[in-house]
Length: 292
Ligand code: UTP
Image (cartoon, rainbow, N blue to C red):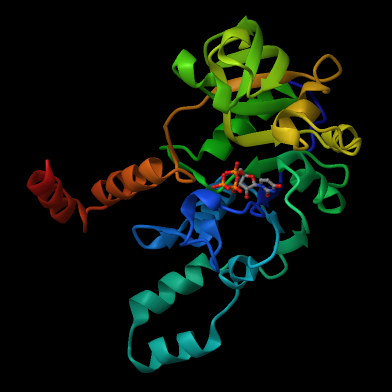
C-alpha cells in the first residue's frame, strides 16, 4: 500500500450534455433533474459521492442547467411553509440533504465538445488532487457506494481506477473498452483503452461505466484537445495516455447500474428503485402483475 497517498475529497460531475435522447423532456430541463421515484438523478450521484467521503463537488454545467445548482440550495420559502404546516418529517429530510456551505461549485462548458473537454473545464477545481468523476445518468444500486468501492481500490493501488462491467460483444462499440494486461478478478490492470471501437477490433468486452477515480495528470493530456471518436475530446483517450507512467486498473464493482440516459434503462430504474422501497414495493408489485 503506497505510503503518502493524497486523500480523495473531490468529485467532478459533468452535466453539460444535451440529453437529446430525452427530448422533449430535456428541452428546458436538465436530464440530470429527471427523478427516479422521487429524487433527481443528480442527488443520487451526490449522495453516492458523499458516502465515499467526498467533500467538494464541481458540476460542469452548460446552458439551461442552473436548476441543478439551485437544487442544492436552501429553499427558504419552502422551508418556512413546511414549518408552518407542521410538516416536520419533510423539513428534516430536506435539511439532512443539504450539503455543507461552499462545498458545491460549478464551472461552465459553453459548448459540449465531449466528456474529456468537460473534465478539462474543471481543471482549476481539480488542481493537484486525485478526483472522482460521476456521470449522473449512470444510476448505481450498490450496497456499498460505487464511488466508495473505487476509493478503496485507489487506496490499494495508488493510482487510477475505473468501474467496469462485462457487456455482450455486440455492444462493446458503445463504450470505452479495456485492453487487459492482467485480470485478477476484482481488479484488472490495464495496458490500453479505446473509446467506441468497432466490434471486431475491441480488445475485450470489459467496458467503463460512469464512475472513475483519476489522478490530476490526466488534465495535461486532455489539454491537447485531440479529437477522438465522434469528433469529441474523449476522456478515454486522455486516460489512455496515463498508462505506463501511473497505475491504471479496472474495478469489477459490486452492484447494479442503470443507464438512465437511455429510455429503457430509465424505466427499469424506476421499477428497481420502487421495489427497493418498503413504502412502494407492494404497489409496484401489484402494478407489474397487472401489466405482466
Ligand atoms: P452522453 O453521451 O449521455 O450525452 O454524455 P448527453 O448529451 O448527456 O445525452 P444524449 O446522448 O444527447 O441523450 C455522457 C455524460 O457526459 C456529459 C453528459 O452531461 C453526461 O453526464 N457530457 C458529455 C458533458 O458534460 N459535456 C460534453 O461535452 C459531453
